[in-house]
Image (cartoon, rainbow, N blue to C red):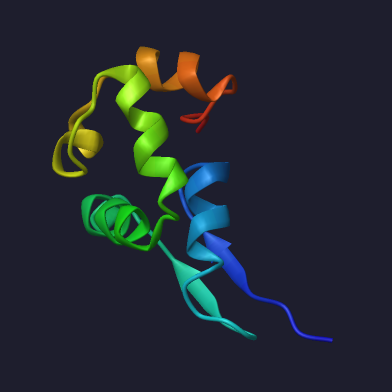
Length: 83
């Protein structure tokens, strides 16, 4: 049995980090690497995810890391930024 592990400040980033080094990988995202990790997650995101961001007035992937939390939380329907 194999297992990939992601460690990050919140559940969502940890889940994304676990996808980086498959199989049997361990990826840690700390506060210093948060911006780079966010950009990498967006680069690897399936096309349906960026398209859904249009609903929260984000037209390109670059400003996603700077978007206010409230619209993203509303669109996702969950606490995406739990710490």
